Image 1 (cartoon, helix red, strand yellow):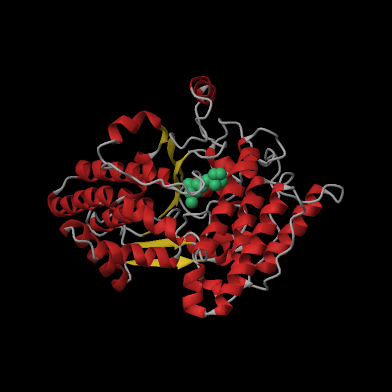
Image 2 (cartoon, rainbow, N blue to C red):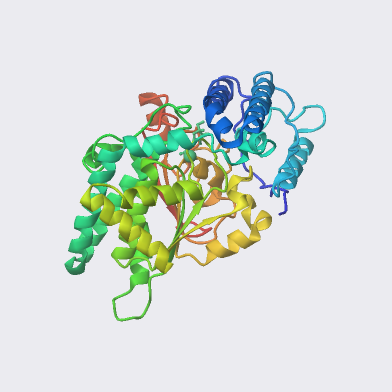
Amino acid sequence: MDANPVLFQGAPPSLSAKYEGSFAYLTIRDRLPTILTKVIDTIHRNKNKFFEEYGEEGVQAEKRAISFLSKLRNELQTDKRVLPLTDGQEDAETWNSYLQYQQSHQGELSPVSWFSSPWLYVECYMYRRIQEALWLNPPVNEFDVFWEGKSQSFLDSTAAITALCTHMELVRRGLTHSSDSHTLDQLFKLLQVSLWGNKCDLSISAGQENSQKGSPLDSLDSLRAFVLVNHSKQVWSVLAAARGDGQGQRSPGRVDIVLDNAGFELVTDLVLADFLIAAGLATEIRFHGKSFPWFVSDVTARDFEWTILQTSAANHKWMSACGVQWKRYLKEGVWSYHDHAFWTLPHDFGDMASSAPDLYASLRSARLLLFKGDLNYRKLVGDRDWPHTTPFHLALRGFHPAPLCSLRTLKANVQVGLEAGQGEELSTATSTWMTSGSYGVIQFCSSDREQ
Ligand SMILES: O=P(O)(O)OC[C@H]1O[C@](O)(CO)[C@@H](O)[C@@H]1O
Ligand SMILES: [Mn+2]
């Protein structure tokens, strides 16, 4: 993989903890050490399990992993140099070249460090170093330090999941006779449910419980005012145009969903994907997840399989009906799950065409790409300090494999594509509008030109 990022002329500076008091600064100063402490604690709490599974060897590995992570926390808190990876994994070389690139970009006088370098880079790096602590220490190398939180968040959301699955089963039954306006109405609802599902990540709350309690459909009306950009109609146009007039002129194609968090959010994405197939708006769905535990709650293959299994095995009739349907889609190849090393690199998506051309090429054959969540948004727009009125297609800096839409609640201080004055008005009303997770966008872009 080519590690060198693409330089984009005219892009504003990267968000960074070097701006004291900024959200990036507070994240690195407060939230990341808390996450590391929780990781250390989780490993320690599982000591007996390691002993039962691997004997004394497991306990020794647990100790080494903990001491590695305590050292990492100290490096972060004392703003030490970012160190090269030493675990010899396939992606290590790419990470190390990226570090060199950052160093050459900053100049030798300013070492690449936690508080001086781009926030996106150092935050991604922390999750890769957590993995290094485990990979360097078999037999605990397969342990997912975030598993407990992710599975608990699913279990705590059972009532909301049941309500959503019941809704989906009713929609499924009504679809055969439904009009276009009914289908459109349901699509708009499920896009919003999937958007607000993104409130339930565990990274912004530093691992604190964050599940969905009530029915997600009941709150859509009251949340409408918090959707700052709503391009649902454009999403409908892309999908409905592909569906054509039913005379076989065009056939609906593939929708790719670049997943974010496990737990309730993943269920909202699965329901949306189910609806797209059931309504004939797509013939295939590809889900993209992470190949190792990432940003506390992000979906891995194991989370994906477990979630579908749990849903299909539920005691509730409609919840299990959904799970059984999802298993069928997977078996028939209508749905498939993919991971690619690129999703767990520090690169933003502007680098994808050169750094992961195979992935970029595969995304090009999708009819529509859905990018879930805040981190994906940061990577779409390069995590830079854009003026809020910057057009979305410009902030994508050449990343245009296919028509795309971001479903994201705002948890980092970057937001483009707003109307003139909209950002200022929001700042006056609520200073934390970009970071509280209370606002969201359904933001679409069809090409690299003005739409
Ligand atoms: O799961 P999401 O929506 O990507 O949110 C994760 C977000 O939380 C944070 O870790 C909070 O700092 C952001 O860095 C990140 O963008
Ligand atoms: Mn996430």
